[in-house]
Length: 143
Image (cartoon, rainbow, N blue to C red):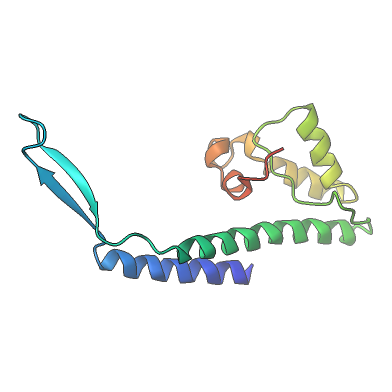
């Protein structure tokens, strides 16, 4: 988790420096469409490609923390970690996702399983599922 936080801090510092250089400008154009004021965004300095690496590393590290936590909760209950053990994240609840949720948390104490279930994006506790922080972290690994 610390490594993910380091990546996010580095990204924030780079983004702040980027914005201070005013990399974009709004250009007004009175002549392209008669009778209308058209405003265009001029990109003077595109965002560095390095940001995609920092974002990818941060997301990967944060996602791994959840999977490691899940494994530790199984071990804490003297359960067996399997290749299915992982932190489940689902935007919808249906028979398939409910089954996968049980499979990924198998071996965990019932109260830990219940807590993980209550944090699922399909409950809408932290915004609608597409905007839920877990959903955003989970993009690309949909079931």
